[in-house]
Image 1: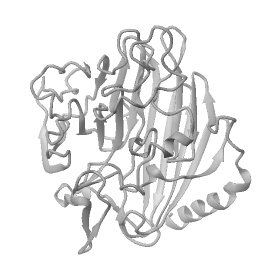
Image 2: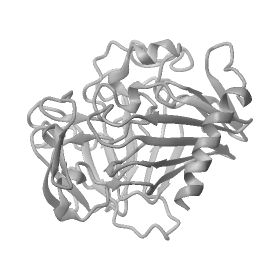
Image 3: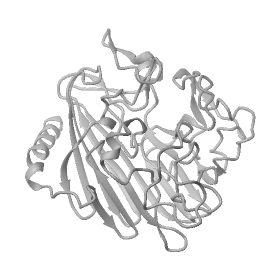
Image 4: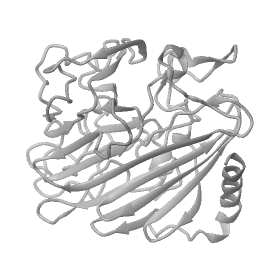
Length: 379
């Protein structure tokens, strides 16, 4: 199986240049299926636009991004629509120990590493391997120690659209050495597409995670302490007992600092554990908006979902020309609380917590597979 995987990755890389058509005039690749349309760019293997119909039959672009592909490389820190890697989210103290050797990763989040640092996959250009009417595949070769981690990585990311559905499959392996490997897809959502006349924020969005009664307790800088917290019913972080609007606890004590007391972050930037058998064919998370009527269900076998409610959006990045519109609230800029990222992944910083028993080191030749499916409908 390992040799077959290596062969597939090698063949896809060698054949891609001759087989892939150029992007559209806007610099983006467009794929579609009934009830859904999406656009992508090679930078960070990012999704730039995702269109679905709202309750009035109006096509809405419900993810954050930029109109111009060149703006993504000029705004790398936000990881809009990107595949962060080779290790997503935080590495505590920018170091880890593997087989008795301590490795150091770039510090780009205080004393920690976020999304593998400034040379992570979210800041790299992937190769376009294949394109069809409803699917696109990107590939990347990540050399050893490009982000301070041993062993090279070869990876493919395939995005596929079927009726009202977005599917993502990531396959990666390290042919040479054991190395940290934990990936995710980093899309920011606003299901109202900034067209709501009453608000341009996501506090009106309803979120539900019925299998997530536990989360990783964070330190003041949102790095896991190692403690696993059980979420009481009615708690600020309780989205398991019943669906709840993201802004329900705006005035609740603990709202300020809930996503980092070190920075005074307001809202959410936490890692909820998914206590669910992957054999259960039910969504691990659901996000919806009464205003647009759009509902999104996330299906994945990943063991956690990181929810980030965009506290650090500076209010200077414009929404896309495909969003907003006459009568929309706001000034056309993305504010703090204007979006939410839902990152299906494994447990944050598991490489520094062997007591959890997470498998986050792969290689040589081990297959890493990540999958998620997003289904869209109406309330």
